[in-house]
Length: 105
Image 1 (cartoon, helix red, strand yellow):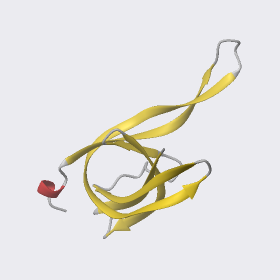
Image 2 (cartoon, one colour; image 1 turned 135 degrees about the vertical axis):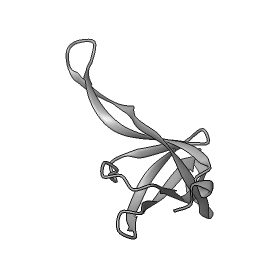
Image 3 (tube, one colour; image 1 turned 90 degrees about the vertical axis):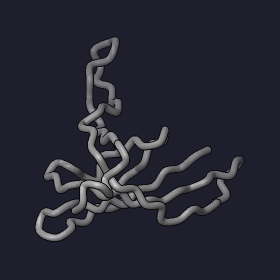
Image 4 (cartoon, one colour; image 1 turned 60 degrees about the horizontal axis):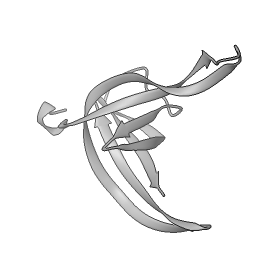
């Protein structure tokens, strides 16, 4: 994997449980790590969702191989939150290709 292709800074987040005000557990997104990635747009589509239309954007994020990336995480990039929909290993631990979707209202 060429380092020059990894030209975008992205942050991976995981859902963390912390104690709330009354001691009850609350869940919130917490930064797990930040890394360099190559980002490629896959498709853009409009879908009807009552009462508003929502623009849905799909992209592929390619990063160096890591063992701690899971589909329960999300990516923060370009001011948007991206839900991970699939992870594919490239080569023999050469990298990860991550499919993700962002939805805007």
